[in-house]
Amino acid sequence: MPASSGGATIREVAERAGVSIKTVSRVVNNEPNVRPATRERVMQAVSALDYEPHPAARGLAGRRTFSIGLLYENPHEFSYIQKLLEGAHAACQAAGHALMLRPCNEDLAPAMVRQFARQTRVDGLLLTAPIADRPDITSLLVESDIAFALISPRETNPAWISVKPDDVEASRTLTEHVLSRGHRRIGFIKGDARHGATDRRLEGYRDCLRDRGLTVDPALIVDGSFDFDSGKRGFHALWQLDPPPTAIIACNDDTAAGVVVSAHEQGVSVPGTLSVAGFDDSPTATHTWPALTTVRQPIAAIASRATELLIARLAGESPRQETFQCDLVVRASMARPSDFGNIWE
Image 1 (cartoon, rainbow, N blue to C red):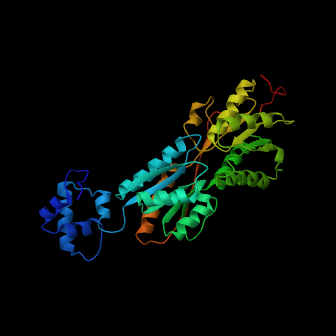
Image 2: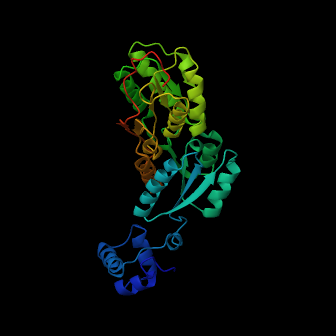
């Protein structure tokens, strides 16, 4: 059997505990039908030798490989995936599982997912948005009896594990904050149409305006794609309106940064003439000038929880659907509307 990361082997643990290698394997894998006294003796040997079972060695005891696969689409802004990977890895490490990564492009096909699962022999898969919303992929996994968990899907299914932020409520809170500063003409730049988060954040924006008795003006809502360039395009489209908005909410921080830069290029003061808000609280939010008012979603915690639920599902527990709350982060990019008639500096 392979040596553990601590240096000891399963054979050494067995010799110290006075049991067979098979018994050590059963204890390490938390299998039943091991006497309490024997289990205690084995665990004492494991602790004394600082033994950590290698996932591949654990897999020899049965069909499981004690590994989880994570499929993600390369984003425009890497900090989201970085936090997601940190959360998933932490949960896998705590449970003694390996994490296998599969970066994907828009041309991802179900056959590619099947090939990844077969080659790696992972026990289950984590699907991130927008892959989490692909019915052709989820259908394949159901038919293949491969366990999976969805991170930030568009819709939830009681038969599947899903974990996501409460984007609707977060967007409502952000929009309410912008309204509380005196803004009434608020632009909104959408994110990637393939992501459920785009629709949910737009829903929160619309709901908040309606609850305040304000009309939702379609002209103030423009397309985007969660990137810097779409923020620049969105600013130019909104700034051509008569009158232009006094505040713009972007679907993520990269888009909001594009708005801020374009405003500076046009001589528009932020936040003196135009207030700007983003979403996610990525590093970009504090790298712009001024720093962005935004919404912080617990990305790492969401990924960690999805991984925990998937591992629990593999152990026989029922699937669960959970939602995480987000926090408003107020910074210098938001102010009261300017009292000056001239919008140009």
